Length: 336
Image 1 (tube, rainbow, N blue to C red):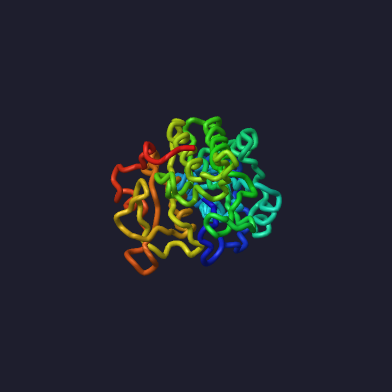
Image 2: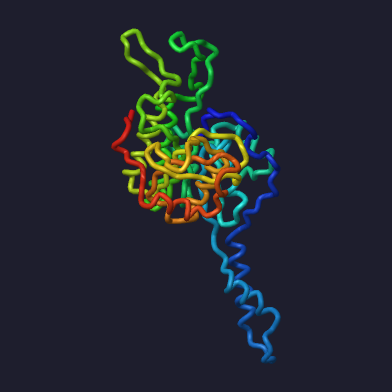
């Protein structure tokens, strides 16, 4: 989900965060018990004692444990948007998974607690399993990232692309499969929200040619990023886990919350001809999917209208309802 194919506008916010907002649930429960005990002590007055007010307040607003959510790709772009949005919400306790110590240090320097970030090699199941321990949801935002090699493609005359940090087969298939398996090892009720990509119904989509090499015998190796992504999606659908799969269009580094969003399925959208969407809006939709059960068991495409067109999306349940019961058809396209 973090291929930088549309490097337009701003990068994810690096505004320093306040010190860790995560307080001990145990201490809050102990405090609740002590206030409860004090409040039940008899008093000589028939007037409600002032110290009973905290008890009534807590009964009206019970303390609930934050949901622990694993977020991979937290040092990237879309994944970092998801991670920071969850950090700002008291009902969530996100664990950001990054690939390197350098990525972790970059997050910590902006005020993120070191305890909220883990180093995770998604190509290793044990690493994923350890990072996901205790989580009841997982947001997968890892993706192989194409970069120019500096060479020219003789057939197209354009630059050649490679995947210096791992081919799609390793990152988008094996890496995502490991994360899905790790989620299932925690619980068969772990909700997995997966950021993928539009274009999966077209085996000849140009993205599949990135990083692909033709060998002397005419066969090819590497590339096929959308086919490997689609294989991981189908694996998730068949895993039995609660899932939400989002296929964003071309990703924009622009501010979110300023456009009307449009959902569709199978690379078709009747509401707009635009096929792009800000990363921040993708992240917001993924966070909303964690909040609302209506998003479970759904796979759909996401684009936006241009800024200034339509009505800015604020009601995400209504957004989902607009496509009815439709979900992506995995008999279409090709799987690697």
